[in-house]
Length: 441
Image (tube, rainbow, N blue to C red; front, side, top):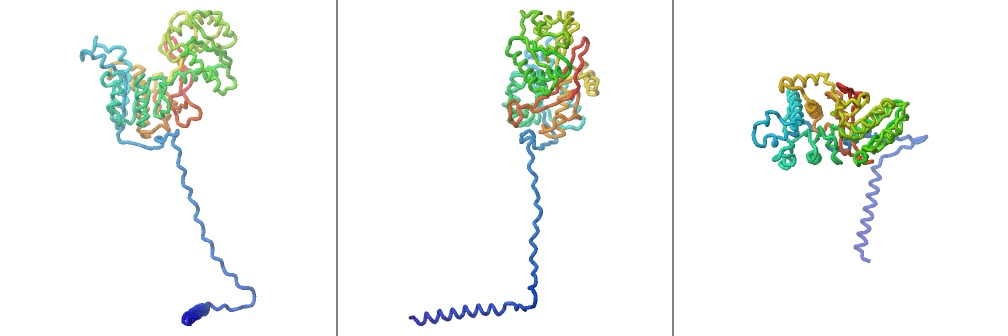
């Protein structure tokens, strides 16, 4: 055995024992007492601070992230497109041919005059604007060139009295740049989908016939509803939209909708088989053209004394004249997204200003240009670039009650394909003036 290693181990063991004893010397002395041991107070558990719930992020309006933003500016840039045809008018000289503007120029020019009057009025109310005006029928600076040259990249709002192909070009640009584009006059969606920045103010034909059908169902207690259409794909599509409106209508008194495909060979006898003598016959005629509309009306006219008739035509009937004697006594209606009886303060203001500035009476296109510009620039000024979450403010009403609603072309979609004015007026044609039949929404 190695003595030195054993002696070292023993010394270490003794040292450890002495340290353990030393520790016990300094423990507190516990005095024994009679009775139960005293209760020791337990430390109070730390109180939990109340949980503060974090606010859940709000969903973007209409599931469009841009619409959740608030983007306001001191000065807004507005781009306006209208068909002036200036290249055609001044093709050979700066003088106006015949000293009067050609008729095809007037709608675009009158629309712009209304726009300009609204812009001047808004500026006088303190709205700061930079306005860009383009002739969308210009040969050397058409819409494609304007976009290609990035002339409206800084626009905050686009207002356009445009048709094909400009409508699609501006719609695609608006979607790419996330700029609201107000289509002022084109009554079509042009096949556009998935573009919530497109605002169609001149309602589509589908919306017209849906509103017309609903009015026919609810506006007459007992009724016999008949669609009169020609054998074309276009008019068959209109009839299909009416039948779809019938399927969707939740109304316990709705009458079934019947249909007759007519042609020049259709006889009065064939028509009379669908008519009833004891109730109003609601005849929805799908012809958009004047020749077709008058052709079927001539077949109906001889039977107006036997069968009570209410004839509903398409929105194009607003400019048609039915002065022929055989049409007397036939009650006719058409539909329109606009109605202006010209008795309000805005109409009087526009009329007075046109007399003062242009020495003329404002046309419907001028009223339309004024109304849309006033309405949407006000929204821009109030809510900024993305006013889409609250477009139907009653306080902004000018002549027309707008009802812009999201349109979803496919079931289950979460993002609108576009927004459309769904407020349709049913208007009865009169000898000297037309009358609104349904009230504003």
